[in-house]
Image (tube, each protein chain N blue to C red):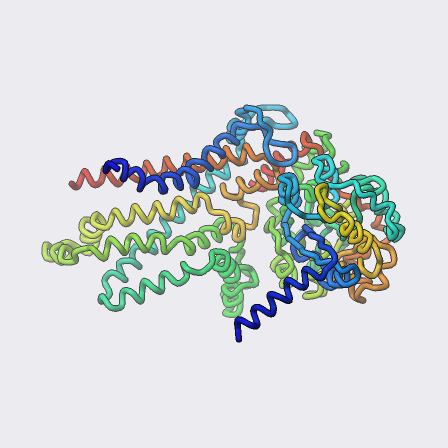
Length: 294
Length: 341
């Protein structure tokens, strides 16, 4: 066999898997989004763009007036807003944590990393229910606050956007710390010392020396947190109380009780597009910065 | 030594299946089939029973429609029985001609979802009402106003199960309509009422037994069985039947269209219509069963439970839940999305 043929033969299994596991299902979703919903779930094989129309617009059943589907738009907005907030909060907590670990002696770093990893290995549902146990009205935090006399009525934390933010930050924080730590570990700290030698303040060193050097880690971490947040299902379902849907829940609703598979498919693809736009945006931003400094 | 033990148990297993005269494959909701009753059935008829779980009517329907499932018995909810029949997955086995059919409580014989019972027999039934913590709210609990026009004491402490058909039904009846109504004037009132009430609700979630018991929530649209289990943890939790109308559901056993063990399946349907066997089902799943005379065999706490025995004056307010036509379902979907967004 010629070298190029061998290469192709060796690549073939990966290509086949990629096609059947990634492209194939996506094509099915795309096709379904152009069909008509069956009466009791499933689809009718007739072409229609109703589902895509229904993502952004709706006809009021009473006045028959056409308007924006503000129910869908508000779910989109909440998903994007909460994902951004989670990314920022994870960065604010994750950056100093990664810095702290990276500046420990070599031997103890692994122990610190292990401590970050252990919760990450625990089942997502269990971690989410643990958060619920902490913040519910009769939960740990409120019980302690009331016992200490700081509040008389329990603070309503569960089933708010706050609880979803806390839950998602807790769940996805390791995904922020890991890449930042990986960048920091490779950081040459003599550059930091050089900065101080040149009379830079601590803030200037952080902003002008450390941050640009670990930026790839920050970008990677932000993407790793933002993307799964957009599609989060368990956390908003358990901690959001079903009154504040996120995109994942809205999609599930279409395939379940509302029996509108094409709309569910169209919403899934819309989510995909949002993720892609966000990624392009991130990559562009990271690339431009690199050029400016390069 | 270990290997011998393994071989012996394997041999026993093979012998066990070989010994039984026949087989029966039951496809049912999880945690819903009394093991004790199955054991009795296996012994009595020398039939080996296999049980497989599902978690929603839609899942069961999809699986049966695909064909070749090998299941003999399935247990769809009443609202889904007409769909199962029209999709051709149930066998017209005429259980109404079976020996024990006379035990079926008269109100459960001529049901709308299977008139005269040509396909199905009762399995378990229950109601969707309102659980209320009576130490927090002392007034009348038999009212849907607790959820849709809540009193001050309950505001912010209400849960609503996210079951579209049940919640829509409750709201429609509260606003003076009938379930599955397509009357747009009523539906607009329903939508406005739901949207208006939502800020007073804490959550729209399942799994409220513990939260009712430790007063994280003070009221909830709820299933009677779940309410009973909350009461067993906290005696303040009472179950109200809304006077304007509350839904009654029933799950029903039927033979699948492509059943392999039809005779055994017929034996099974006849078997569960015997009061003592139906009582075993209820003692396990904690719902009522629709077989007259089974009360005598039920656990004492079941026979007297107010969640299961509907007070006489409120019996008329219950309506048997059915599946709404697709064009109505579409409007309900729009309202539901508006509500849960």
